[in-house]
Every structure is written in structure tokens, then in C-alpha cells.
Image (cartoon, rainbow, N blue to C red; front, side):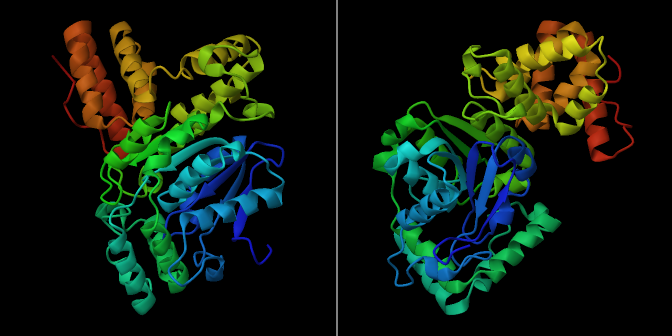
Length: 413
């Protein structure tokens, strides 16, 4: 690494399409670990540390209060240039998302696609960021640690190993680098420029319980950027991809699939959302979405069990069900899960129903919302069918919770 580049790590096939991942203030590139295995299967992933964070020197940003998000965006462009990447996809959390929005607005020719997670076009009153910068310069980042549980993630999640590690990253931050990032956020306001992001496919992700950037911030981005998509993740605070990794990972895989280049499962460079392109592109898109919704373990088991007799069927459902239907952009995955659950209940396909209840949770539905779908099905598909569905759902929840399944919900009319 040269002195003028942030610390960064590369993962994934060297020939895969490039994807740059930006972190949030106070964290290191480790904040992306929940998504890394899935993203690195289809992309050459570059994760970077903010100045003064992780292993990046604080001096990459000015310490006199003049740092800007544009300065951070320039660092990202230098990283891309060092790799020889003329164009790249980008995803960022909080300030990392702001960097992505700045790049899409000011350097759209470099951007294949963009995802902003728990981010904003303006992070509140600039004076609050100036005050935080002054506090950290005076007392260090330890002054911020006590307030992060409840902001970054729920208090119940704060005792998990991943949460504890992220708090240690915060403690280790250089105070000058952290404060300079606060200066950058104080001067940042991209609201007027959002319509200019029109040429870059954009996804905005929000945690429904995020007190730092509530869902209204993501909705503002999605409403102002032409064609942008929006996902709200239930049960997630500011670091939604850490606390609820499954729906965030699934959303990112789907969003970046259309922009992926060539190479085995990553060959998704055709317009699969409209059913055009080659069988290879549909098959690649299908594998990506199938893994995102059903999980690697399920797909790997299905592949391992494939025989010459079942191979054509496996290829059919991968290309058609997952590569054409599930990749369509007219409905989001939450809606598709609701429809799928109802259809399976109506036809009594309990084994498939159990699988798709797990998939619905991955796609962002809560248990309460799944219960509402089952109740709706009782009206239109019949009470016996819904009764069986409730029993199946309870069994799935019991297995996930590690309980003995002794509940009587759905076990008798």
C-alpha cells in the first residue's frame, strides 16, 4: 500500500467485476464481514478503512476542520485507479454511503451501480457533528463507545462477539481521523444533487429501528434518485447489515447481479429482469438469487443431490423460476415471498412452505408479518390449509429457536 492510499483488502476472483465497499464512522472494514463471503463469489471485492480507522493513517484527511466527503471520494477513486478499474460497483454504510452518492453524482462515468445502507443525503445539523469532532479531539473515541449500543445495533445484540469486536474497533480509532470524518459529515449536503444520480442504478437500504438515519432518510434518496429501489429491514438499527445480515446480503446480491460481468456464476451481464439475454446469464442470475433467498447450504445440498435424471429439472428451476421470475424488478422480494407462501398454502405443499418461510425471513418479513399472511390465507384458501400452515411455521420457528416445539399453535381446528 502506498502512503496516499487507505488500507484495503481484496477478496474474490481477480477477473470478477469490481465492487468497492465503504465502512461507517467508527468501524473498520470488518463491518462488511457478514456480506463478504456472498459478495466475493460474484465480485472482486475491495474493502477499505476510513482515515484513522482500522489500519488507514489519519493523515489522509486534513485535520483542520476542512475535510469533506469529496476528499473521501477522491481516496476511493485513487483505490480504483490503483487496481486499474475504470468502472466499479459500490456499496457503503452511513458515511460510506455518502461517499457512494458523491461519486454517483460527480463521477457517474466511473459507477456501474450503487447501494447506500443506513445513509443519508444530509446527516442532520452540522453543529452536532462539529461538537462531536471537538469532543473526540479532546477525549478520544472512548467518549463515543457507551452511546453506540442502541444506535449501531439493539442492546440485545450488543453482547454478541461481532458487536463487541466493532466496539473495540471504535476504541482503537485515531481521534484525529474520527474527528475529520465528523468534519466531512458536517459539511455534507447532497440533497439537491440526488436527481443527477439518474444514470447509476441505486438501492437504498434502511434499518427500521435506526435512530441515526431513520428510514425517512433512505426514502428521501429513493424518491429523488430516478429508478432507485428501497428496502426497509425490520429489527435493524444503524448497522443493519451486521444485526440483520440475511436480508441485506440478499438485497445486495440482487441489486448487483444485473451489473455483474462474466465468469462462472457471476456471468450476469444480460438484462435478466426482462427475461432477455442468454441461458448462461439467466442461469448465473438464478444461482445468485437462489443462494441469496434460500441460503448457500440449501443450494449446495440441491446441487450435491443432482443426478443425471434430475439435472434438467434443476437447470429449469434455476434458469426459469430463479433466473427470470425472482429476478424481475416489478415486485420486491418481500412481496414475492408473500405470494409464494399463499400459493404453497393453497396447494398444501408443506415441505416447500417450510423452506419458503425461512426464505421469507431472509427477504425481510418478520414472524408477525408471516402470521398475517397465514391468517389472510385462512380466509381465501380455507381454514384447514391455514391450520396446517401455522403448524409448519411454528415447527420452523421452533427449529430456529432451538425449542422442543411443544406449542399448540396451529395443531388442531
